[in-house]
Amino acid sequence: MVLIAHPRPGSFNHALAAVAAERLIEDGYEVSLHDLYVEGFHPVITAEETRTYGADAEQVVAATGDALVRRHRELIREATTLVVVHPNWWGKPPAILAGWLDRILVPGIAYRLDAAQGVPTCLLKLRRLVVLNTSDTPPQREAAVFGDPLEAIWTRCVGEYLGDAIVSRTVFAPLAGSTPAQRESWLARTATLVSTPT
Amino acid sequence: MVLIAHPRPGSFNHALAAVAAERLIEDGYEVSLHDLYVEGFHPVITAEETRTYGADAEQVVAATGDALVRRHRELIREATTLVVVHPNWWGKPPAILAGWLDRILVPGIAYRLDAAQGVPTCLLKLRRLVVLNTSDTPPQREAAVFGDPLEAIWTRCVGEYLGDAIVSRTVFAPLAGSTPAQRESWLARTATLVSTPT
Image 1: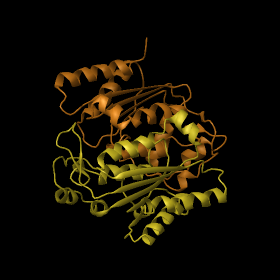
Image 2: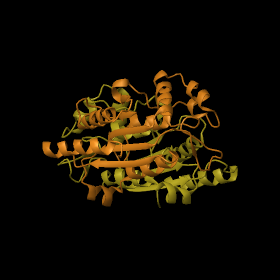
Image 3: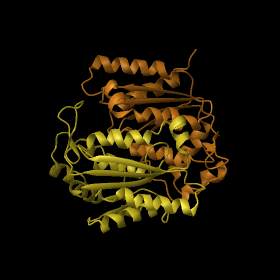
């Protein structure tokens, strides 16, 4: 399952997602590629959907009236690899992807909590989460000034709920002012990153 | 300007926002209180709205066809204090507030960048950002396991764009299992937090 969250068709994020999807297909995966903007994913979880504590997956999948949300929940339950591609906006994913987390990785689908403050049990088959980010901020400034919260969101907050899945995150930055040769090398690196380790 | 991002009317987040708004009114502020769910704020920035680099504020305000977005942009330009109230979801704000950042704090309204990788110049009149969060995760676990990315998002990523505004963030946790007395004390603390220092 490959997700892309970028508003402009033809963005470098789209090129990264395309390379990732192509390489996964070459590696023998069945790939579902989702441009959340093109699909019109609606990221605002409803009050009803937040009342799923303790429900099992079939009930939870059926508990939304949003057919696209139901479809994404079905797909993530079957996925063994998740690739997400997005720019760094305010140290978080764009809202459309922030809401994908809110609405898709819900209790009963992604994990089970036996107590509200407890340690989650992962319900997914995911073996790998590969995060590919772009940013206009040089890595040193991101770390020193902004504290790189996206690293914690993906590798720690989300990662903690993914059981034994291996989480990797790669940032391509600064994108603004990058040369064609630099971007080519980032695309080549992406193909290597998503390829199944041999 | 007070923002609340929580799907369930009557939530403790709503109580926090109400107390904050009331205290600001008592302190002599003109308060605009915005329940983003009730207003139906649409958090997905459009491709057109991302093409605002270098535009000035009047052009940027007019550059969206979304009347609510225009209104929020006008309000944030006049605000001296911003209070945001939201739960911790995956170490980030709920999507509806994530998208408020994406669509409202845009170049030409919130800041000016003279170079894509440069240091921002704040365009707002904000003197204070007060962030009030709820979470079911005890503070020790949040820091040790999850790395508390919301702290970096608000105080560092957003804070860096707010010029000399003072950013404070307070987390009320764990909310699950909290007693009425505990929640009363959190509400009282909120009133103190938002009150103008004398």
